[in-house]
Image (cartoon, rainbow over all chains, first blue to last red):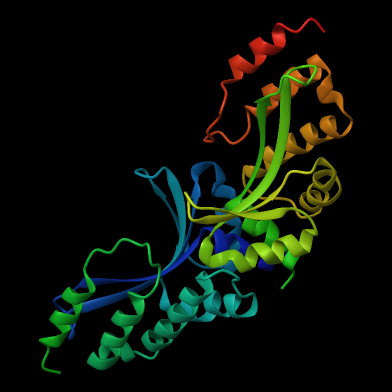
Length: 154
Length: 154
């Protein structure tokens, strides 16, 4: 068994690459960008998430009382750039999730290079992020984020 | 990428081992046993199911209009015994689905050896099958099947 290949199969089924946004007054552009890689599992399957966490050497596992699931999640941009993204470049996903991954990877590169502090790049990141995970729920509508950004005189 | 290991990861997320039952008057015990291994995917991801089908060299792919999904499925007991089960023995599942797989594997062995035509074995198969896939829907209640079997004078 090659565990690296196994993980790509598991993530094609159960993994999620997403970029969410929050309003933060203290930020120059008022909008915080939060990339996240996660895998959710029924609480019976905590052990596989522990194996994945050990394999990547980063991230954390949280329990959601509401869904009765455990979620392994990596939010650190440094870990995403250095550990998560290289893995899925070497062991590519085979479903349409690979399209999400590619967008995610480019957005993380922008953030890693602090380009998300530039209005034009942040607009581009918002547009791209809303193309991902078709069926996902969103805290804010894209138009709301873009209109806030549009008012910035930067 | 080791595709065999990838498949085990994918199946831990999206695969299903199940044993269903139907009433058939022409059968001695009136109950037909139908083992099935399947993977369902959104219609955008038909290509990965085609790769899996080619890898195993058996099974078929059907489209469900209702769910808008494609399902790769293997029902042939010979293919299950010779192609599917050996794969998951060599590349074991890592979630609780492996427990389902082990029950499935033993039930398939019984069927392969035609033991399901014996009342005691068929009772055992029904009991085991209803332990699998906790959350799954069933056409018939277990008690209904067992009561039909109980009336057989064999």
